[in-house]
Image (cartoon, rainbow, N blue to C red; front, side, top):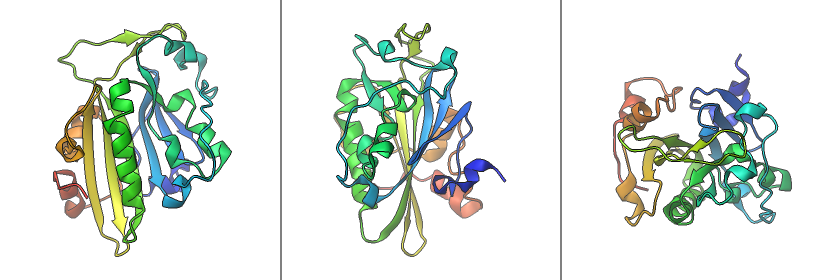
Length: 237
């Protein structure tokens, strides 16, 4: 039995990764090449996102990552980019330890301030609102980075000895199960800049994101019925 199979977050699948980091409320698929999370996987629980503990901003390196692939706080200094959470601290307020783990740099990416504090934050809140609905039983979320090979690459940071590549885009793939066992799937792609359109504008077919990211999402959903979910660009909840 694979160890990740014991985690509730992986019920419907988990993408491949260089280094799998298990935290109390989420899993990180860390990229050694890009020195940031290629993806994160979480199970949104409406109860865990209540204000039981305060945000403490304990940004720090993740000592579980080999030093040559680890990012440092100095990598972000004067970069012009935010230390953008892949898993929001607001999703982990059930305990101080769980919340502090969202501030590990293994959960951070070079995110434009206008995105981090704008549409990305709006999307995070919209997902929490979805999870809080009475008819929704569970919400699973994979978030990840995307690169456009037709665009120039930007490199920042020297604190770790290597420069970090700034992602061109980000994605969130949201799988919700309702109380009747029906599954619904929404996948969003947002450019790493200010986004001015409403959230439904950023809906994308899941298969497109899989091809772009080089990741298989929700691989434990077998059969033609679930395969069709990945090819639908459905209306937002």
